Image (cartoon, rainbow, N blue to C red):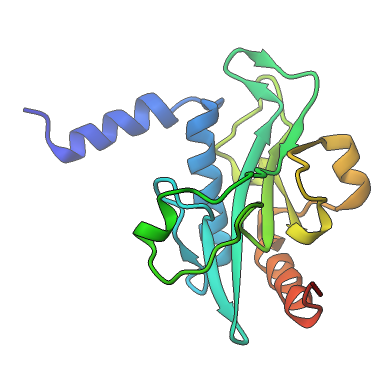
Amino acid sequence: MASRSEILRLLTQEVYGSPILNNAHRGDVVEMMVAHALGPSWRFCGLGWHPWDFESSIDGSRIRIQVKQSAREQLWGVSKRVTLQFGWKEKAPSYFSQNNPGVPIEDKGRFCEILIIGVHEETGVGADQLDSQQWRFFVIPEREIAPKIKSMALHVARKRWTPVALSELAHQTEKTASLIIAEPVKN
C-alpha cells in the first residue's frame, strides 16, 4: 500500500514536475506564490469552490482577493494572445449562504475588492512556471473593471495597470487595499 508521503511525492513529480503546467494546476501554484508573498495577515480561503481566495480585515474593512493566472506557453503549445480572466458571475453561488452563514456576499459580480492576476510570458527552453521570478502580477481594484466584463487582452490591460514582481506584490496589494478603504464606492 502506498504511504501518504509516497502519494505526495508522486503527485509533486507527475503533476508539478514539468516546467510547463496544466492550467488547472498552475492556478494552485500561483495561489501559493501569492500566499507566500502576502504573508499571514491574509487568510487563504480559496480551497474548493469558495468565491474568493484571500481575505483580511484592514482598519475594520473586509478586503477580499480573487487570484487568477494566465500563461503564454501551455501544454499544447504557445498562445498567440494572452488574456486576463476577471471571473464575472451573474449570481452568487447557491451553496455559499448554506456553507457560510452570516457572511455577506453580493448578488452578482466578482465577489472581491481586489483581483491579483499572475502572468507568465516566458516560452521555450528557459520557461519555468514554477519559477516565481518569471511571473508578473497585476493588482487590480475590482471597481476599475466594468460590470459583466469577463476578460481583457494582456496588451490592453498593460495600458491600464502596471504588473509587479512577486517581491513587490505585498506592498502593491496593501497600497491598493488602503486606497479602496480610503475611497469607498458610493452607491
